[in-house]
Image 1 (cartoon, rainbow, N blue to C red):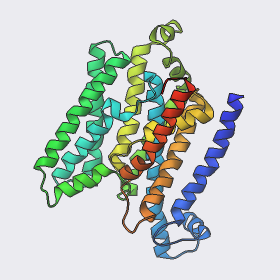
Image 2 (cartoon, rainbow, N blue to C red):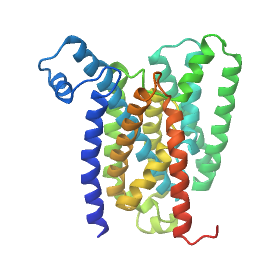
Image 3 (cartoon, rainbow, N blue to C red):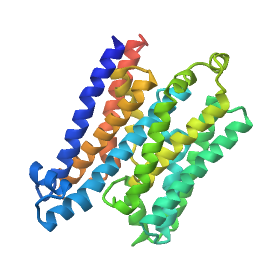
Image 4 (cartoon, rainbow, N blue to C red):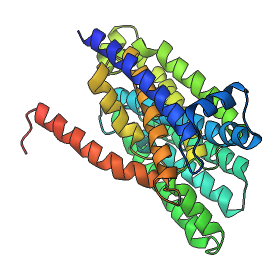
Length: 333
């Protein structure tokens, strides 16, 4: 019954995500009819302005939203299962803080989009490498990795504060602050192509290893008794999740709650089996961020930073999910 329900949910999610994708191409300051958007995508008739709007502005931004949403949601689902903790996402391992520090460092020296993307990615990897090194030295237990991640995240948060303190308040500080709020307005094809490649490879990896991910949700002794090399695989999975989060943060800034809330919603629809949870999280995460980005750039005259919008919607959603979990477990209020 659960398998049938999970497949049904996927058949609903995929057309819904495709519909949101098309909506994001036609909605905006300059309204476009759906047929005009389709013609522009197919290279058929249409004005140069319309083709430029669809192919150079809205299409890369929408694809970026889909990649970022899918990466954050799948990484959150994998890490929650790996650590057997429903409150885990990329922030716990210091990925987001490391990426934010790299971007702030690049912006403080007036670096361009490529420098911001490159340094944020490198420092995200460095943050998790430091967490993994600490965890490896002390047995790579989930609790050790979480504590190490919290410490490393706090370190990079302090370094971000230092950069903001010494940054030029008239030029560099506003740029750093705006980037940290999150957004996809700078999405362009030249920075998006590597993101698409990493996203496809990363999601494929998790789909192929979905049955091993199910075993990693067991205790270490149970997983080892089934022939799984737990500690090396745990590091590999954390590394793959880190790359997905790092490449997402490098182009979008700090966007919270997607990696925490979306996996819970997907798990409620399709169950905890990663064979269904990973594609459901990817599609739901992509659809969620496409929808939120469309709202962010259309609801007010000026664009709303995505980090603010995801927080305003994600916090109430998380509280509802948490209260539902507490009630289902019969915990005392």
